[in-house]
Figure 1: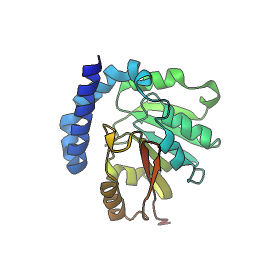
Figure 2: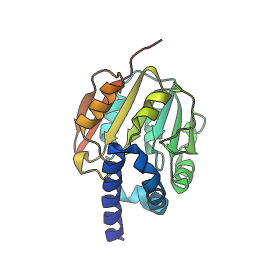
Figure 3: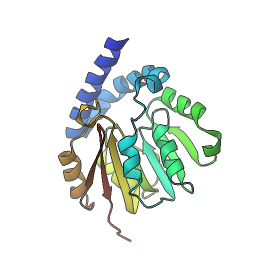
Figure 4: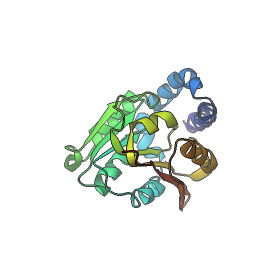
Length: 209
């Protein structure tokens, strides 16, 4: 199985590099990547390091409590659960393209979080939410679709990108690319964090109200 996982990591990096440069290519990569993560879902928790959310959680520490938060590419739901525990009054939605990932996330959700956290199958390139629905949009090891993130993020809200193994993460976007895309959409100067082997980028959307 190890060679299959390694091949999948290379494909994830290829997909990320291509789609970040040319988002229209997503329609070509979406199906194969979804199938890859459907296959990985039962194995997902076992192949990740215990500290895979260290940089993600460091970013959360710097954010004011949101009323609603979105975890894009939630996988088996650890990011959504981390947000809910950090912000006890927040409503949290986790979305993932892979149905099997969402099913695993629903099954493993702690009972004390069940009233505030829900999971949905959704394509991050076309999120099923109204404009300005969330005060926090978070992505851990996830391909960003910048226009869509900007659309669903409320004025003065925060966006958080985290990569559990820095530049060695299969799905990784360099800081300078994230910075240029965010600044072009009017975000404040992004902040880059490093925690262990992980990195994170945090930025605030301007208050246009």
